[in-house]
Image 1 (tube, rainbow, N blue to C red):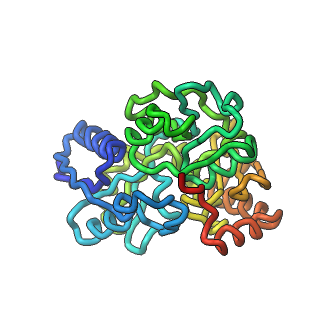
Image 2: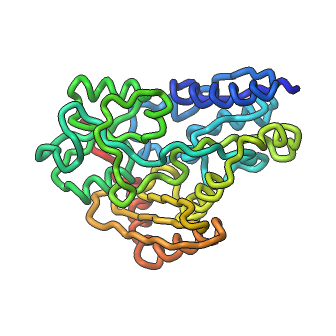
Length: 311
């Protein structure tokens, strides 16, 4: 069997993901090595992600290692991968998906509705901010960066009354003690690709592609391809106020998507069924643009993104 080198970010969650893939490859008899690579997104920790606005900020340095042949494959949270990959790379596998939903974490409160007037909620996601503000305009939204442990520690120490995080990361790390509510998708539409891992390789590396084929989950690929097609149609990266949730229902693909103003004063919602993931995502994206999504996104991009206030 082969000797395979995996490139990964160094956060606790990224390492869990890389080691998970490593173990699955090891079960197939491969010898696997892990190379930790620091990305731009890991270096900029004092600015809200939306303000940085760099596409590929969690992938660029890893792709450089791939291009140079220092690693054979890269394991990413799929939502961090730009919808259009850099030339020379492809997604060889999209793994079986964890829960794609967001969760409400708090020490004192049971759900978003229970939060006190003017409560401090931590998130650096414009998508989450917009949907929170639509529900509760009174909430104070503040930036929250750092790894999962850092975020949960800040919550435990009382810096925030609640934080919103992805269920997948907490489930993978077994850190669900402070999860009080799994937020329904129609209340908090997730990010495109959330909960899935994307395994990136060099285009034309058919040998590695073949080794990874068993990791590709057809349902996860169909759903995330649809979500990413929508995101691509809207011209958005992972830090814009766009949500997308696709799933297989009765053998067909169902897509629910939103485009929102960062302050939550306007949220456009659209849902549709289809059979072709790319076509469905693109059509729903086009509908949202025609209904006013283009004006919302133009305003967001034009203003350099309206990010949460610094505490």
